[in-house]
Length: 279
Image (cartoon, rainbow, N blue to C red; front, side):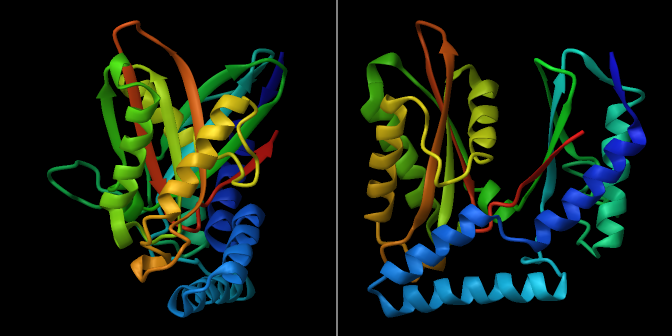
């Protein structure tokens, strides 16, 4: 049994939290570059160029790309033959607090949703644990801003709604978000499971690079259709019009009940921050 120390988890989470807020993921940068080169609408093209410039300034100055440095979502894929040698939740939160302090990242988390007292250090994180084959621990840190999180949706569709019902729901969610989710967005889509599983699938879908289609040809075709329909909305970068409302659409699916068709959309702004490291 391979043991990963809590200190290793803390140090890794701290570094990933800082770096994810500073460095635009390569797939997102490439997608923004491609969109800027193909945009015919001048305001949209200038906005995409500004997004690139903002990313360059953040990287050069080692400062966050956005003032909303996100609620920290931490995905832990723990091998069957590995274990964390201590309290993994405390280790993760210690990393979040350290990363927030070292990176001068905004404290955005309140201790209670109604009383609204700020915790002051961005903790606690939202932690998701999966057990997987092997003896390694993969840590993915995905800071999630709430301008886009607030635009996300879950809907309990009926089987009779079918594929068209799912696609219409996804497009409607992006349309309702408009410019408020800081487009061009990435849409993570979860289909199947139950109410909560669909939402988690949608969030996990955002971790897949936008230039990597679904390995299932059926779902890859649906991703392409959704991207075309969303970009045909004309919302454009930051809601100023244009052909680039979304940089990508990623779908994850799971088995579900014969009486249900749960679907969720987790919308992410154009930065779609996430970094991973395997211990």
